[in-house]
Image 1 (cartoon, rainbow, N blue to C red):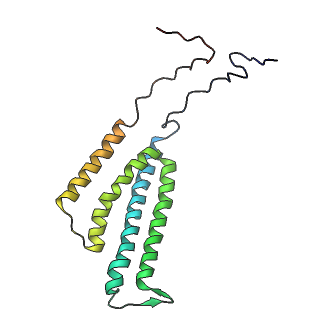
Image 2 (image 1 turned 30 degrees about the horizontal axis):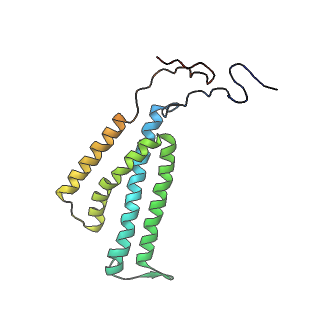
Length: 172
């Protein structure tokens, strides 16, 4: 026995509605908050990894505040590294919130700004020097993010009903 309802049957299920656009249901104000949180998160991720490098290189070699202290069984460099890990984890938590407020494609494109943050944070904490190629790379990253976001979403067209799978195909 065949079960036919409208244009659907057991072999041809009803057509699904067209997929939602990535920007459907997203309020512009929350996207701005998501982008700001995304940049804060990226700054914390970079700060956390730089603090970890600081603990493993500078503190391990020279100590901190003129001494090599221990807290229980942990050396000072291990404690600094763990502090950097905590900063890194908090950055990931904020990034999770940012992705829930802004489109994931936008947040993933903004992750490239970690290179720009790293150039300035590592200069401040580790005493690294910025070269001309670092500045040129930061400019190229910024332009790449801009182009990606400007061309990332095609213009939204009005929804057209999808043809039924049982409708005749017209070749023109």
